[in-house]
Length: 415
Image (cartoon, rainbow, N blue to C red):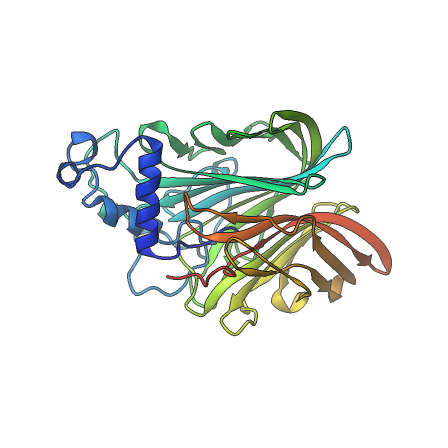
């Protein structure tokens, strides 16, 4: 589960205004808005209405809540049959979609790093877009987050991008995995190797990686959907590559490292928002040294309890997987960390138990401050960080690594 909904319509508009000014595109005047961007025939009936309507919950975790207004987008429903490589690509009939990579990297000198690279697509309702041909036509908006955790240096760096589909500045192929914003991109080969390529760079950090699947992908949930709530349609289509052998190059402040490691990839798409009684979620991806993986998410309700739709997946060493309901695992947090920037207080350590697997794991952040404050894109704060994993499995010690995402702690997600 990845990222959050913007805090309010007003703050979103101001953020997009500021971003357009910084981007060099500039904001069109009201007169030009009435005629259409760039002086062409009307592209969007109202720039602000179109943008806000499309991005009210950009990066919300495909958790579909009840909504008074009908959506023109397709809901995620049971019976979906995945077809690859097509389903690696974009799904424009669904409103929200993301391609999400995290991983642990190791340099030859022993230094270790975590990374995150995530691309989001947000569809604009067709009624907000005039169907006139134009190079400025906006049907989708794109957002991306790039973060690096320098464990030895105790530094966390993140950057972000927000762009639109027009003029080729951003986009996603519908037939295969190829998504980009400017010179940031994620793509995968369509041959048997299925190798993924990641590229991201900003003024101080540069990431160039190849990722080779060590296991087949795993679809989460049951009957082709991953449920996020109690209502019909409160679901997403969600699959992962849980173990990707990774190598490439990472540059930090001009210092380059040849790196190897393990990565995780999620792809998820659906058409809704958080339920009214949900405030956020805690998401875990865990890679154990015995070649097994665990994914679980806890949808948090207003009273602090877990939504019954919370669930997970265990991936065994041979690639087989098993769905887990909320009753199949327990998450207990101990300790907290408070951000000096957002003032949010996050849980800072967890014990996760899987009674049916006889597994007990302690999950500890490798760096306390791994908070992303996305003032230039979704204008929300969330914690997404590299963690170390220790514990026991069937009475024997075991170790591993992972990533944790925490949303809704800086401020309750608003609809």
